[in-house]
Amino acid sequence: MAIKKSREEVEKEINQNISNRIIEPILPSVELIQRTDNMKYLIWRAARVCYSTKSMVELEQEWNETPDEKRTGLVMGLIERGHRTTYSHPNFSYVIVCSRVVSHQIVRHQVGVTIDQESQRYVPYETGFRYIQPENVDDNTFKTLMENAYSQYMSLYKEYRLSGLGKRESAELARYVLPSAISTRMVCSISLAALIHLNNVRVQGDTGRPQGETQVVCNEMVKLAIQAESWLKPAFEKKKKKEEVKVK
Image 1 (spheres, helix red, strand yellow):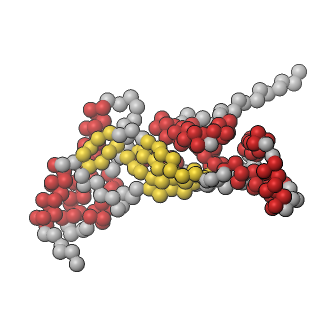
Image 2: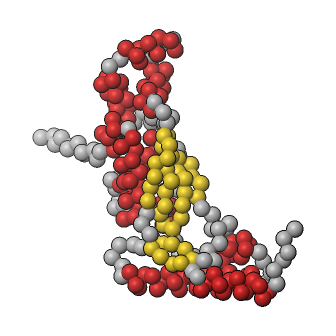
């Protein structure tokens, strides 16, 4: 059983962490760590099950005998028509480092998206934190703001620790004053259908102007997906709106 530290020992530990703190900016990053194997085959097979009376053996034979260009054409046709269930089966998994501003936007895409995120309840920031700086803000000015935010956090954290609460409980309560700019890490698994929707909203701006950092992060997710599955590129290209035909 761990020996409980005295009030003086806790205060000394906290003050040492404060003196050695690291408050620094970092850039957002995205890493593709895994994706569904045979993605095109999975989508094609899902579609053929929907629309064919052939047996599983016959469908396998059909796949083997179908030219890849025709396979791709069928799959892209499904995406263009929005037959979402067929291309909801394959997934991409990423490790994302971004601000909490961005993570709050991505978690809103609930259908087809699974996220595990760094917890501010269980991860204390005694020794500082890294943050994402928004565009067009003076470096020194923003760093000062982050330093002040850290001081507020540690002021509360220290008060809770010295009152007898443990690290986790103190971090859980003190996190209320943490800035949205603080960096966070998350593992995000997203279906192809959800990634296409994410691209339309957060990169292409179908529902309004995308926020800068969110656009950067989501664009990188798309870029990595296309690098892994180059045949998917047309699915992420901005669609030209059809001109309305004027009736004379």
